[in-house]
Length: 292
Image (cartoon, rainbow, N blue to C red; front, top):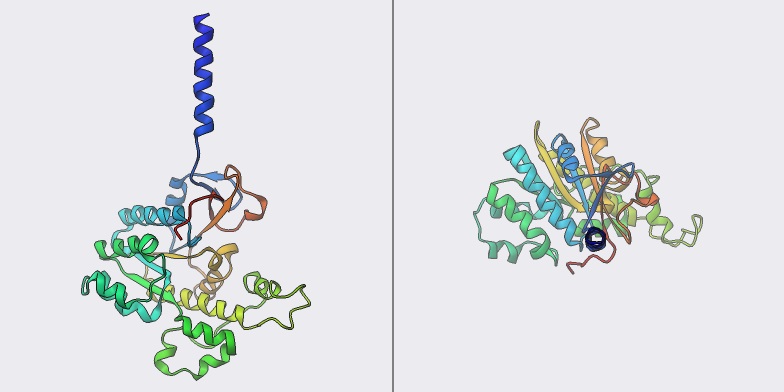
């Protein structure tokens, strides 16, 4: 009787433990197979470029970005370069001065164009670069030039002066409107694939300018045997398009590892629509707390 009772209690404990085991995230490969963080780290350290696609308001994304950066630094040391969409090319001098400890934190934060979630989500990354004397690259196009393209197309960039052109990818900007990442932006504006006459056809071009400039900034700052880890909105690297397309156009032999971030109600298995979104897919619960 005691043996039966003991077995019953153990069963209850195991059952309760299973029910209370709430995972904060799951990792999958591009085929939807479950993988570990160590699998990701092993693959990442052999890459030339890592594009860590994030959901901007997701705390797990930001936590894992810092964890991965920390572990890669232990392996690569000063051969690790950091960069992010969240900083524009015209802020590079400020970034250099801050990460090399030439200016104080208060001066940097007062003068740089910082996202509203900088202090919670990106400051730890920038300060990691500062502490470890790593280069941190602001890769994104100044938003004023993306705004110009959204109104006047790529042609308007030719009217900029030499200094302004130095802040964007070399002209003319290559553009493939058939890529789904850009074609879908047009389709979303119309009621059907044919009903797009009223849609601003320059909006995907502005997106492409961002992708091209970020890719160019990475390539320009990447030297042999170095690893560049880049943080960007997941849309900029999902489905091996956007930035990946531009990077391959610039240097076809680069080994690029992409990480996509998604949310699902159930994170135990990858939903079909998210398969092959990236080399690795970071899946977090749909009800995950947001940073803003």
